Length: 304
Image 1 (cartoon, rainbow, N blue to C red):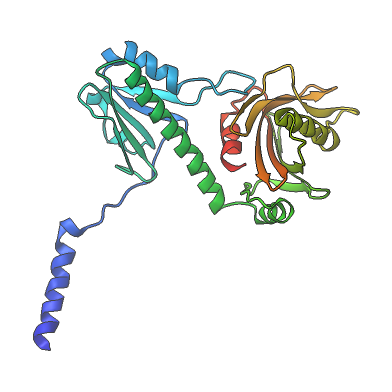
Image 2: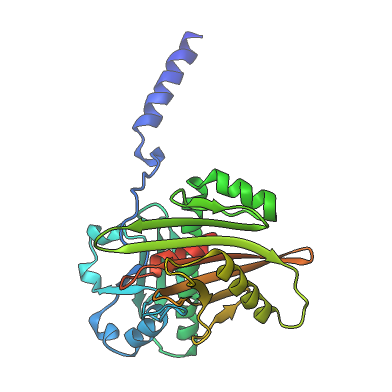
């Protein structure tokens, strides 16, 4: 028994001192959500490769009143890639001697590191770039959704579940302002002398006739907005701005709203879900004049 006791202590101390058994501890990632560190030689960045990467990753987000792009590429030379950059949440290496691949959590938590072969600027390279864009874009939305799942408004979630049978994780900053007549409305207001920020999230439903779903969705939305989202000026109310294009893809609508008989407007994101014979609509609106709306629109896309 004594021999076994000493042996177990020896094995314990040996394993603790063995560096190969130490688990790698990752730090938190750094950098903005919309930023990508691109590790690439200047000669490629200034040529066709860089032009194609900018066209794909810095494309404009549809449905915004001003020009805003999906991502901002920050190019650095491989020789300048130091520890300072290694914890950034999004990193792309592009070179002629790399194989298309990716890895997660290489130097930090919730990190994406991608590798692109740029020896030929052809259709295959374009496809690889688009795949990389779609992957990083999807991960950004997943991370946003996960963050709000961990910290959300439980009362709002329960009301929406009970009334509509869907699960939405609304940020805790939103206040419930209406929950009757199969219409749920929550809002966030921040008014100060420097800037105003106003956001709404609505959930409502209707039974489609089946002739023109898109037209019905927009028509029902206009009716709900006219009845419930009113301006401070008498006779003013929110409507979809039909002078601007409404872009629809896979049940997600993006466009601009306006205040009729008033002077406000901004982007909206609308999602549809079928439950039996009904369509459940979740809608996000933001008013943030002269400021970037990207963060707010991306949050709507993630949580609605």
